[in-house]
Length: 456
Ligand code: ATP
Image 1 (tube, rainbow, N blue to C red):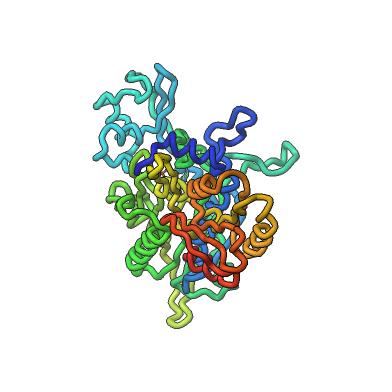
Image 2 (image 1 turned 90 degrees about the vertical axis):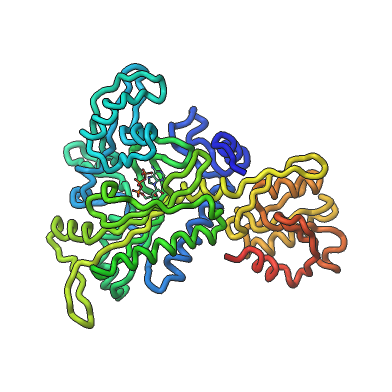
């Protein structure tokens, strides 16, 4: 079932996954806060990525670098000059548009991200592309807008220095390349991974948490010997896709989109986007780029410090090539939530919202439900405390048991444990979200049983 964006946004808000940012003050455009269930789901996504790409990887180590960096970083990386979007305004209704998006929306077969400003402007004029908001054809000339957020460092006015909120996490990795090689004694090929917030002053943020100005990235910079980058590019493409499938995303909702020559960034010799079929259609989820030696070379030149790597066996010296799989946490969150959302008609005519998240992603792994509030509360609280040492546990004692099951189904809790008179002697009833089957499990076996059913 494909859920609409509006329904998904309302669902996320009503159940405490994602709230509008600063709602109390009328909101702040395009900001979102993750609620009690949302933060659990988001943490699970980040933790599983870390586990797969750092903990379980024989090649990779982690890093947590600062968001604020020496502004020379952005001069070297090219962001100060080139991290811009082509922008035009509709003079008639005063709406702002990304010129490349206008072109692509008008003709899907055109790869607008590879077009120069002049080409974009010409295309819009020749085809007389109307404003998607009011239908007029009356635009300002195209201009470029830098996406980096500026702020200043220092408190005394005349000593202030302009700095930027990082627009991507990977530059912190490049700046620490030598530190990691030296201290972790890493040998090429190896990777450095980090997760964290990035900021882009997007011209047209939209689609709920898909395109926001503050977002979180999961990035891996994988350093390899020049000439071997295509092998590693294929390796990380496969590993990335496999991770998404293992998270339970529906295969039909995923596709790989290779960039052709004209779409490639100036530093890249191959790029593929893994796209997901969001409620508004297919769009980028995970960008995988072969970035050559561009970044390390730029930082070597601007810092005047050698960033060459010396092969310990052949003594050969070179600047490693880089393959980068870069994933947005918020887009991954949107994908798993829309992929898992289902509505089913029950025999009694009621509708069951069934969030069939992979159990490892579920905000709560199990719900503890005393059958009769007063009578079973003590035993239920005892079990809650015991299980909460190992798992995220929901506790709900109010309302009819059927209603309580429904609520847990709607928020994706894979297991529900009902506490009744027989529980201690005969085992507690465990109900499964997906099949609605119930089994009795002895207290001594509970932890192993839950572990087995929520494993990744
Ligand atoms: P787009 O073309 O959608 O603007 P991009 O190609 O500029 O994305 P990258 O620079 O490759 O994006 O960033 C890597 C990943 O970071 C993207 O695949 C996406 O998941 C995430 N990302 C980038 N920009 C945003 C944003 N504004 N909001 C949420 N996630 C983002």
